[in-house]
Image (cartoon, rainbow, N blue to C red; front, side):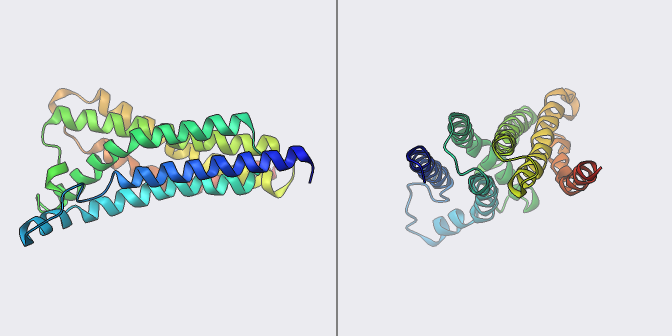
Length: 224
């Protein structure tokens, strides 16, 4: 291993530790009890009502984090572009956590008729619109940043190599949620006032099932 490769490996490792720590800090913002220690059964039950929403938030943040971990397996070199995009991902994660909690808190509250995560529920139609716009933009920024990271990994890999193919496929995978996030934010912003509280922007995330058809289409085009 050359001196340059050794230095790049050290820089890549330090960047990964920073990203891992930042995502871990992001997850602490989802702590269901905050800084309050319950001293009665009622308070404990009130705090535990936020567990389902916190679990869904945790899963989505962990999914994004794993996307960065998998990117590092395909791009072991420390580059300025990788550094900047990774820092951008951390920045968006710190913003994303708040609308993320509002979305899943409102979802759990609505499905349980206010029993679960009632504190995080959105009641006003204007608040619902603003929540979906913020969530959609933050979701699109995070997924789009991951797509750019994989495109960067593909450019660094030799053409025809297995790493190059995997990186391009992952770029397609993350491009789909980025577009869906933008679509949802645009839908929420353009909804008429009479139906501003419509759940349509949230239902549009069901389009995530298009990831696998998109990957299959890309593989067919690649073979042709």
